[in-house]
View 1 (cartoon, chains in turn brown, blue):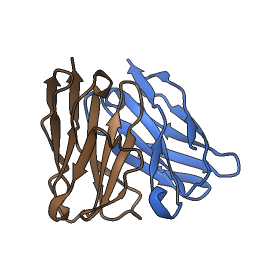
View 2 (spheres, each protein chain N blue to C red; view 1 turned 90 degrees about the vertical axis):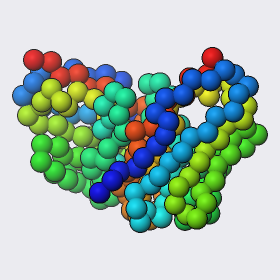
View 3 (tube, helix red, strand yellow; view 1 turned 135 degrees about the vertical axis):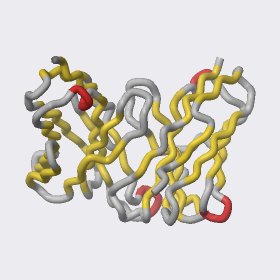
View 4 (cartoon, chains in turn red, brown; view 1 turned 60 degrees about the vertical axis):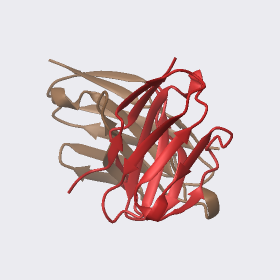
Length: 114
Length: 114
């Protein structure tokens, strides 16, 4: 069974530029999560999807971040414009449903904003 | 809000036993999870405790005391490959936007030495 796939693995951009991250969850997993992990910290939830609906985006900085999950499968997280403080690893995770306690994480995208 | 405390670093000898503690303060609690993350890798699920007591999975065990808001991860017969960061995470069960959200601790970096 394929795991959660993310791309790109690494991205370096200048501040004020846009950037997008892509995630393909495990087949059949209806719940998808985007997390941000700063160096030396645990992952922090940005947004959670149930199928194509964003059901928890309370921690997503909506002035510059946006996300979508068309057709309830793949998802894209976008930052526009990026700021220096956005440098972090962006992790995507999925689970069969929100009641399942085990989440499966992808390898993440390491973003560096210069 | 949610608050989790765990030691930032632990060093142990190969073949030994190590315990990583986690204390939490949360406004809602449905269970405590543990995840392992190697440098540059994806967090991977290790265990979940919803009820008080010890859960054993091979060389790893996890314990929970809900009355003490405390849990620990026990790693036995340490191997070099166990060198990684270990995160405890609380699952809250609020209805609404906060449902089933995982809040992670800052992680404990375990170094296994020969």
